[in-house]
Figure 1 (cartoon, rainbow, N blue to C red):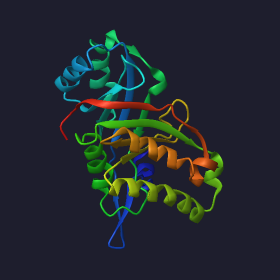
Figure 2: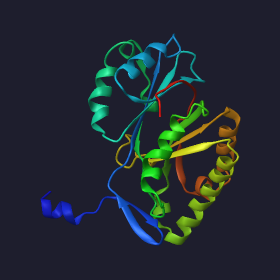
Figure 3: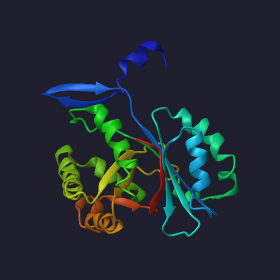
Length: 239
């Protein structure tokens, strides 16, 4: 792509502050990876990630007594094919068995109305994922039905607003926080989004998923949800 063509494409994230458009051409990438065969509750894995200066969290898999899951954060995706790749190809990770069905890679994104893009794209996702008060987590991908994209924009906003209201109710109550990532073209199964539900207890996170079943988006405009990784924090890097 020529320099002129590059300048004509505005790929920045958009927001709205005091009625005026704002933009920021940065975003946070997040990668989830799962393993089994871990018998030390992730202790050696935590040492390896911390020594490499990697930002993220390790979870103990609630559905696998030897399972762990990693969420790694980076503004620069080069980390995933550089530093993180090197770490995962050495012990203790090289001694574990990779569970590829849980592989997820996504990016933070704006919807055009955020008054503070740095807060939405960086600060909030980090503060939720690395919050020691949110030890429980459910991470999963979702694939929207292609028919959703054919709906009028006003109808799409109405459907998404129903989900937003649900998230706010649980958020205001301190029961659950959500991290939403776009993964268009980044997911081997053609999923559209990655969702992280985080909170102090597990039951409210399950209750969120249960309530979502009743929403118009989930009941009519989703092709698939999951697989679901359910875990509790064993290690978090400092925010």
